[in-house]
Length: 104
Image (cartoon, rainbow, N blue to C red; front, side, top):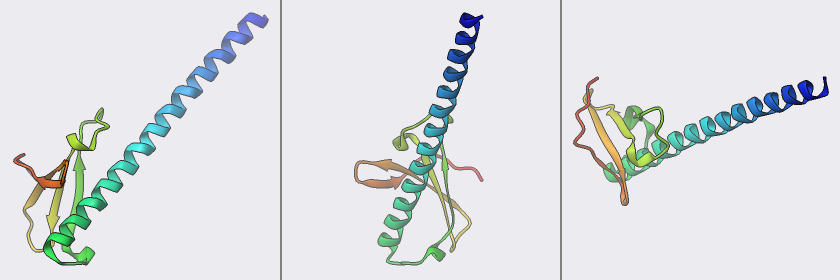
C-alpha cells in the first residue's frame, strides 16, 4: 500500500513540475514578445521622429509555436498612415526590414 501511494505522489509531483515549467516558459515567451514589440516601436518612432503611439495601427509577431528566439520571429507593423503590412526581423543592430512576403 505504501509503495503505491509513494508512486502516486511521485507521479503527481512530476506532472506538477511539468505544468510549472510550461507556465514559466509561456510567461517568458509572452514577456519576450512584449519587450521586442516595444523595442521595435521605439526604434521606428526614433527613425520617423514621431513620438506618439498613434504612429501604429498594429504591431504583431509571427512565430512558430516552438521558437523561443526573437531573431527567428517576424514582426508585422501596420502604420496608421497606410494599410500595407511591413515586416521586420531582429538583427544585431536592432530591427531591419524583412524580405518576407506578408499576406494580410
